[in-house]
Amino acid sequence: MASLREKCGQAAQLVVALRRAAEGAAEDAAAHKARAESLTARLKDLSVLANTDKGKGGKDGSGKAFQDSYEEVLLEELAAMKAAYEAKLSRQQQAMDDMAGRMQRHKAR
Image (cartoon, rainbow, N blue to C red; front, side):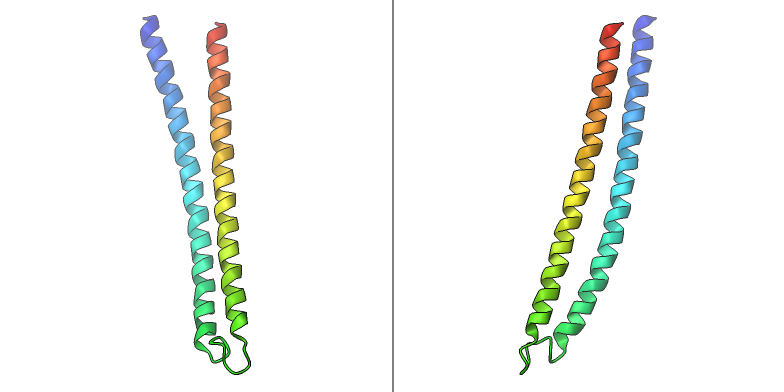
């Protein structure tokens, strides 16, 4: 009977962990989707700029504007990826801390 209770407790813990993981994945997906839409719009703007005479580095040498804008988009994308990765790491750390706390409480019994 005790073994069955332990298994039920473990199953409940797994359900909680899976729900947290699913919520985290859904949050990540929503953030990535929003960021992708933003970057897509920004890249469309850049392609318009690239197709103009000024964007192609015409006589006035303003092709630098396109390069600066492109670099800005890449830097924003890297910053977004870094933020998403750090958020994922913090969630994983929290999950590990929660599990360690549960294990300590279980051992104390």
